[in-house]
Image (tube, rainbow, N blue to C red; front, top):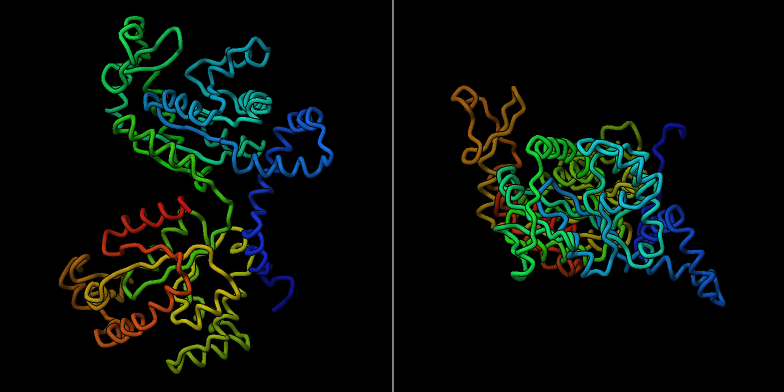
Amino acid sequence: MDETVKPLRIPPQMSVYADKHNIFHLLQSIRSHVILYSQSMLSGLVVEQPADPLSFLIALLQRSSTDIPRVLLLGPPAVGKHTMAQRLSADLRAVHVTLESLLSDQSELSAQARRVPPTEPLPVELLLRLVQRRLGEIDCFSRGWVLEGIPQTHLQALSLQQAGVLPEHVVMLEAPDDVLLERSRGKMVDPLTGDVYHRTFILPPDASVARRLEERRPAEPQRDTALQRFRREVPGLRSAYQSVLRVVNADQPHADVYQQVLAFVRTRRRSRIPRILLLGPPGSGKSLQARLLSEKYRMVDVCCEQMLRSVAAESSALGEEIHSYLDDGRLVPDSLVLQVLEERLGRVECSTRGWILHGFPRDLQQAKSLQEALQPNRVFFLELADDVCLERITLRATDPVSGERFHAVSHPAPSSEVQKRLQTRPEDSSHTVTHTLRQYRTHTAALQAVYPGAGVIDADQDPLGVFEALQSRLTAD
């Protein structure tokens, strides 16, 4: 292949080293701190006057990258962001930052922001300057921050990221519109403290507070406009923060919502490039789950069988060698599979976005070889009983005209005409599937021994249920 068009390759061992020493997280912390906190860091250096300034700064960066909370709390109007952020910042001893607090001082910048109509989002550049100024102060640097209701748009989110405002955790509270409408009607505010209560959902702590509460119901057109604007921006906000995002259902008791939010925010996140391995018997849904994960998190979906067929179609010596094995129906030797895998997983998109591998390894030796060369950092076993595997595979068939796949039970053909022309692949026969299942069960214990920390997911449920279980384990890791 011409070297000028050959895919750029990064040795997979570089990602393994970066994981081990938390390099990606440290680099992210350095970028954020140089942009936002350079003045506060220098002030700390002058005040502390350490004997070794470089070691002092490194320790400061490492501590702030893991121990200092940096939280965004997002959600539609009336979902309970303010009360949640107040409580969260108190428990974390972090600074609670709201749009109102950014506009409250007497600076010209804040005065300029106050002139923007409340029904309109702040111009991106103006919001950026306000947030940078506040988060760059010493209290936010030393204690961390909980930023409530900011950003409001996808463009604001991207601009904050480019400016070094990189949260460790992003919580998006969600609730149906009818619930939000009911909550907005019962909203009460303590004029002394600014604390928010509700006639039904969040009651005041005592009668003296209850007597001074004031009703704060926003005008319906203003409320509806804010809600519609938030709904429009949700996909963009989720996309901007997908790697650090947890969506929490706020249509439940306040205490339950808060415990979920607090548990998530207290998890320590490591910026690891995902190297995911999906294992499981035939029919457990590995290909589907890999595709869903790839679509949501932009990781590269690597199916071993498809990868080998793709290489076999190339006019190269390696492709011709692999083609000879596939043509004869023989297994491709492990050495060739690993050679192809190392080349594929060493490409830039895999090294920067991460990957999901399925279809390999199948036995103990393959697993050991993969562990030595590529070291997956997240492994999941999709568990499914043999009888369910057989039903899923042997009852499926493909329409040669449309290419659509049908299943006799879960997705039958729409007409007798389509049913008559359906074709079943030879490898989906009951005899072949039973043999493949027997082979998988023979090696399961050995594979589990190689990956003792692997997650086990019940695959005998709706595919979206399996996907949600995988997501939960990935975000908690």
